[in-house]
Amino acid sequence: MNCKTYGLVGLGLIGGSLAKALKRSQPDCRILAYTRSSETLRAAASQGIIDEVCHSPGDPKFKECGYVFLCAPVGANIHALEQLKDSVSPSCILTDVGSVKTEIHEAAARIGLEGSFIGGHPMTGSEKSGILNSQAHLFENSYYVITPTSKTDESRIQEYKELVSALGALHIVMDYRQHDFITAAVSHLPHVIAAALVNTVHDLDSKEEYMKLIAAGGFKDITRIASSSPEMWEQICIENAENISQVMDTFIQLMEQSRTAMIQGTGSEIYRAFERSRDYRDSFSSSPLGSIKKTYRIYCDIVDESGAIATIATILAVNNISIKNIGIVHNREFEEGVLRIEFYEEDPSLKAAEVLKQHRYKVWIR
Ligand code: NAP
Figure 1 (cartoon, helix red, strand yellow):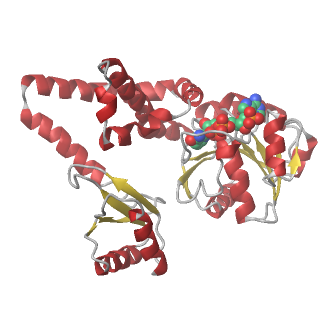
Figure 2: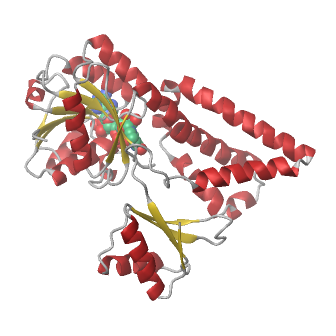
Figure 3: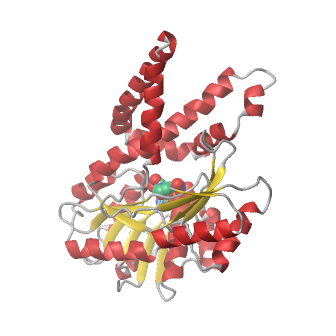
C-alpha cells in the first residue's frame, strides 16, 4: 500500500472516522478534504484530522490523491463524482462509503468512471452523526464490503483490501447488486421493523405509559437502531426500495403465518418457527464463509453491578488475551443475561474460559 495522500468529501461520522483511522494507521499520510460547511472543515483542520482544505470536489489539489473517499449522503457523492472526474489523476481510486450501492455504481458507469470507481461500505456506524462523534477505531473488527465494477483491475482490488485491513476492518468483495439485496435483509429491513415496533408501542401505550415504563432488555435490544438518523434512513429506504420491498414480502408472509398459527392455536407451528429461528440465529458467526472469519465465543455469568465488565476485561488483558467483541446478551436461555465475549482464534477463547474459571466465573464455550 503506497498511497500516502488521501482525499475526502464529507467529514461526518464516517468521513471523520476514516480520516482519524487513516492518520492512526499511517501517521505520515496527508489528508485533503472538502465538505459542505466551513465550520466542519475548520474543526477538522484545528484538530489535525486533515492536512489541507479543498474548496470543492473539483479542486485541482485532489490530483495528488491516490484515493478519494466520498463520505457525504449519496446524492452529494454522485454530484462530487461528476466534479472529481476531471480533477483526479488516472491512477486514483474513487470510492464511496454509502449504505446503498446501485445508484452510485450506475452513476459511475454513466460518467465513464467504471475503471476508477470501486464502491465501499464499512458495515459499522452508530445512531450518532457528525464529525464530533467520529472515532479512529470505528472500523475495527467490522466488515467492510468492497464492490468493484466489471472494469476494476484485480491489482486495485488487492490494494483496496490492504487499505481496509490497515483500518482494522475485514474486507469482503461482492457485486453491488448482491450487496444491496443482502443489506436490505440484514440492515435495512431491521431498521424499518425496529421503527415500526417502537411506533406500535407508542400508539398502543396507556396514558400512564406503562409499556414505556416496563419495556425491558429484549425490547430495548431489538429497538436500539430505531434511534438512528431519520434523514439517513429516509434516503436509504428510497434508494433501496425495491430490495427492501422484496425482503419485506417474505417477512410479512412469516408474520401472517405466525398470526394464523396463534389464532388457530397450532402450537406445533409456533414451536417450529421459534425452533427454526433459534437454530439459525445460534449458528451465526460460527461457520466460516469465504473470507468471513470464524468467531469463537464464550459466555460468562456476571453479577449486575457497575465495574463487572471492566473486571473481566482487566483479567483478560493482564493475561494477554485480546478480545474481538464484548457485550451483554439477554435471551431465554440465559434469562437475566450473560456476558458474550468473542475472539478471532480458538486458542485465546479457550485460554480466556480457563482463566475466568480460575477466577470462579461460570463460563460456557460455544
Ligand atoms: P453524517 O455524520 O451526517 O455526515 C455527513 C457529512 O457529509 C457531513 O460532513 C456533511 O457536511 C457532509 N455533506 C452533506 N452534504 C454535503 C454536500 N452536498 N457536499 C459535501 N459534503 C456534504 O453522515 P455519516 O453517518 O457520516 O454518513 C455519510 C455516508 O456514510 C452516507 O452515505 C451513509 O450512507 C454512509 N454510512 C453511514 C453509516 C452510519 O452508521 N452512520 C454506516 C455506513 C455508511 P457538514 O459537516 O459540512 O455539514
